[in-house]
Length: 229
Image (cartoon, helix red, strand yellow):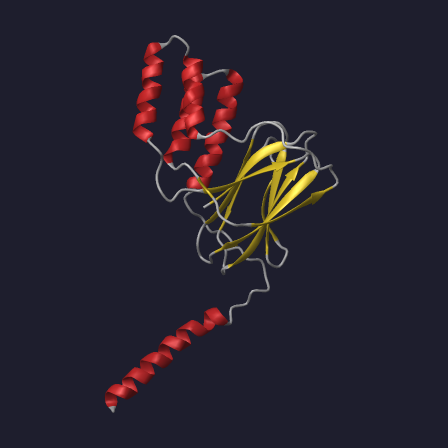
């Protein structure tokens, strides 16, 4: 009898511990104020794309190599099904250009830019061999083409009390901005920096849906990746 009573008390206590989560107030902004975390694989990929754009524009093999090594550390995997909508005042036009570069393409360009420098070529080949295909469990990406004057919106669920990352990396042809809203319509993060690379991170209080908006404010369309952890 005592054993049965103890089991009932334990079960009641366990249920009680779950009640605060079930009755959690979800009416405010879903972001933990002041939360800090080490940037993850999404941040690494965004930085790699920024470096690659600089190296490509300058024709600098060393900068492109640095970008390739970063990109290969945790090369993103193609994401699965995702809820997406698109709209805006701009006309829907056919896709032009090419998607952002992969680590393999970055290494290839670094070799090309190295020219007749055999020592630098050797360093590039060694780096390619060392990094391999990248670490498992990296960022996920979704590829999209966004015409000028239009927006894409993605609905993504992020877990409560876990670091959330979102980034975009474009093909360099137009300015892209990014906004992140919680399920109550609160703006939790934004990046309006010039260019087509953007990054946001935050820590949700509870598990919930977030809307990631990508805005093309340029005069040309842009192939881009949406990246998340």
